[in-house]
Image (cartoon, rainbow, N blue to C red; front, side, top):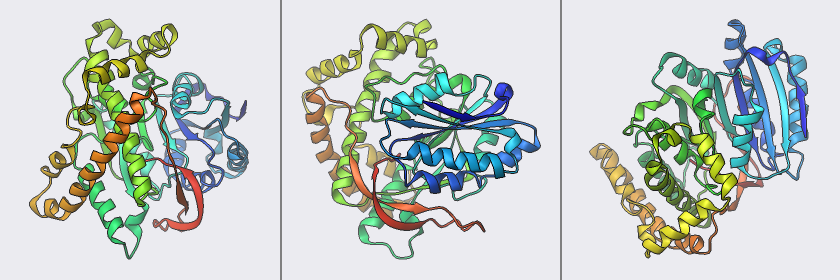
Length: 397
């Protein structure tokens, strides 16, 4: 089902897709923070049009209805409404990968030059975040993707527990790597995105797949981190999970995803003829049509060759310490306990991931008890505030 309120979008410049699955409570504060962004006024000053789509996939709650209510209000009250269009796409099939493919290849306006992809349970606490990301791609023609700096909600707490401090230190280690792409929010050139199609069984790590494709210019060059650029001063907030159970489940999900990315990028797609790599979206679509379980067959063959769980992909057990080596000595000492704890978690999670993959399953997406985030107050307070407890699907970078 599609409900829409739009202007003549024939010359739409930016298409913004909010991907949501059962986010009835989370999506309202998220959209409140979205419509405080300076992006819309900046585009209106340039007489550029923008569309905002909520891509609700397999929702069984009021996510679509909440979006429609807020979109109707913005249509009537937003000072830049003449340059905005709003749509709710209610997809019957659950799954972020299908929602991504639908938004990029079918739902977004064909004339859009830039696409924003964002999750429905984050907050944009810096008002210029989206515009700064867009500016990066407008100014740097070598960049294909612009990202912001994801910030865990616990960063804003005055007092943190020991496990929250470990969580923040682990994030510091991870962020030291080049060309970080967080699936929660990024801006991508439309012509690049439309030559990417996400395999349905990839499931757990679409950001890792997109990163590898973009940084190698569709597997035709050596890795060039400059294809992904960080927009200075751009940030969003997401809810960190700090309970041991949630951390283990998330790490297991990431290891499954990284294994799939390794198989696809480093082994299978890299060996295809150049014309098939250059037309990657069409190539993957044809694989999906001709042999739907093709990726699961690759996994089965991979596990026959790699008998032990620590062999799922190169650097599985060492990547945290490799990242640690990139830090200054002081930061290295501060983050060492987090790297050691993270490596132990990885060791256990890798065993669990290997066990799950051996059953032929890739669609591992755990749920965890989370707490909601309130949007910044109208005067621009940037600190997100925790509100009542609720259940959300787990998402991370």
